Image (cartoon, rainbow, N blue to C red; front, side, top):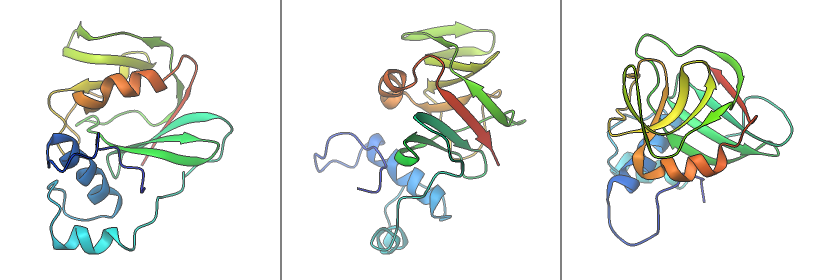
Length: 165
């Protein structure tokens, strides 16, 4: 209900659950360990889905570099909050648009990306097998691989992407 995707509800605490908890911890400014401990459970019962920072029509994306999360937004309502890892030396801030989408694993000059969706030259939202709770990429917005095909379906050509601290 709080908009943290975690896969099907199946009673198993797997990587999907951990990633949803991690995104929640980031938004709520809790320690980032992906463990649903007492502090997480206490906060869940009073938490609200955050509002987008910007106001704009349609379906779009906001990437919060401070909290290391991606917000999927539709009609100014946050629909999904995804745990990400951005550039260790920085990810450029500002406004971009999805201009290239690729299916599956793609090799680039700095390694492999899963379902990359480019919103600036050489900067994409893409799946990675390494998505730590802190900035670690070469500048891209890394998402967990399990959610990458789902993100690809939503990140359509010309979609707005706003990146900020």
